[in-house]
Image (cartoon, rainbow, N blue to C red; front, side, top):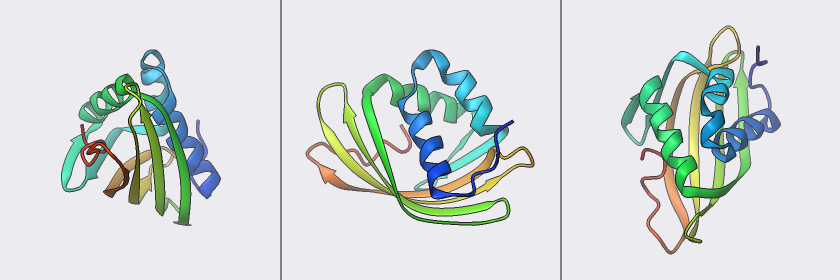
Length: 134
């Protein structure tokens, strides 16, 4: 069991692990950090657990690396809110930075069960505005 996300360091660890893992360990990563009932809404687009898995597979197949910096974090019991930036390098060498505002809720086992996020590209030559929902 994973302990709940109650600090900026723990959230950074979760996001970094989720974004930088291999395609082969996706199932283990999702099971550790996300409830089977997980639902994510990004920029108004809702994804269930299955679609979120597909999203992570696509991200991991196009990213060389992702660095996460948590700028603001609060938690209240099972609820979290944060502002973070993710700087990614794609396999083709393009880099971009995305700002994310996140509200989340964890289940009784500490796994994320719901996330609502808004994203905004703040740097990069290539349009990465869809990275949060590809």
